[in-house]
Each structure stands twice: as C-alpha cells, then as structure tokens.
Length: 168
Image (tube, rainbow, N blue to C red):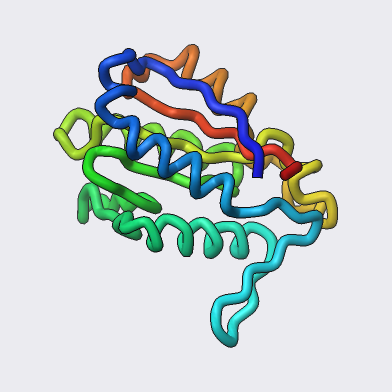
C-alpha cells in the first residue's frame, strides 16, 4: 500500500547507514495491499482488520529475515514487533495512548544501545483506513498525532514515521 514517511531526529549519515533496513520497511509496507475489509489468510486461519494487517506485516518482515517480537527488556516487559540490526519497528493500530508506550520503548532502546532507528507504522486516517469498522477506530493512534508528539515531546530518538494510506 502507499505510505507517507517523515523522519525525526535522524541525520543523513544514519539514514545512509541504515538505508537497507529503511528500504526493507518500505518494501514490506508496499507488499501489503490495503482493502476496505482487509483479510489475511495464514494456513487454515483467517485474520481480519487490525489483526489481519499485523499478520500480513509479520509475514513480510519475517520473510525478509527480521526478528519478530524482539525483547528490549524483560522487567518491565518491553517488546517490539520487528528488529533487524539496530532498526526497531512498532506497528500500531491501538488507541492513541499506546503511542506513549512506544515512545518509551524507543527512548529505552536508544539509551541502552539496543536501537539506532525507531520505526513507527500507523494509519494516516483510521476511519478511512478501516471504513467498514467505524466504531473500532475511535481514538486510534494515527499519523497526525504521532507526528505532533514526535515534534513537540522531548524525545531525541531517531524515528522514521510511516503513515499508511487507505489506497494502493
């Protein structure tokens, strides 16, 4: 699907050093096709909507050799969605409060040498992204809120913000 991308606190040298990982993130996003009622089939199981997208992205990232469910810390438990080298990915379809937990993970990971680039993937417009589920997107994390937070909060973690567009 198509996506909008913005980098925060990320210089040209870091982007060049992690260009392969950045390219793989964009390839995974491009490989998952948006649908008005998204379904992902995995063997005998069928997953819809947010769970379906999470599973579809899991298939793409795992197929490219990314680690799934990387642990940054066990107590308190800080787990991401995917990691390759020092690039750490969170795909977020939860409510807006979950963004702050993700920012904490990013800050912890950077401070402890566990990541150099945080990648946050969120829908740009949840109601348009999930048009057949209007009740499930109330207060969902989205690109505009994540962008605002990354701009104004005192977080200096190099972050790639990827906004999923409801189109292919």
